[in-house]
Length: 226
Image 1 (cartoon, helix red, strand yellow):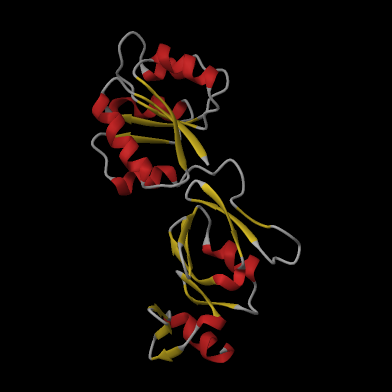
Image 2 (cartoon, rainbow, N blue to C red):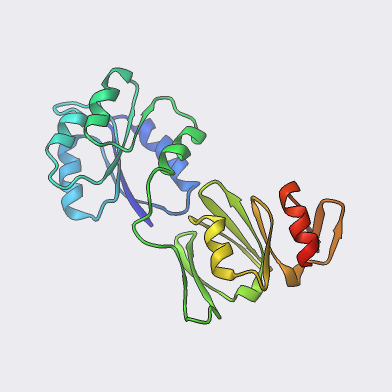
């Protein structure tokens, strides 16, 4: 989980960033600040991993505020002024977003930030259950209950019979952890439980109500192993 604070004197900017963050389940808001002085107080009160920071603010600019910090969290600049980009990067900001920015551009900036801790682990050495951190919860999952896993850039969706877990983890990590005896990579974006496969027709695998594409480079491996 990444705890974030928004520092911007415009309320509409807070609403836009909050809306984007709500789409990413590993981001947790711990404060809204409308000037640098409020932000200083918030950073003393809360554990903050990430700051969304405007530049043009009354009394003290965002860049001036950054220079006061002894221990700087990750910072993503959100501003309408491109002329401060170089100075921002000299202050080790993660990214520099020019308003108005799209959700895709926002996600690209977030993807540059590593989570503070691993979000996927075995609960025991035999991997009888996994602890998957996602959707702002810890999920204890029996690998046998996983139907398939779909990759979305730096994120994955884990499809179970009764729910879907969105987690900040790469599909390659799941592939390594779950092993090849029960799971098979059938596409660059899909890892499938062998036991859940019902049929294969052409370049499609049927898992009951779900159909998974077979990637061209994976087809020979799929037909050999199944």
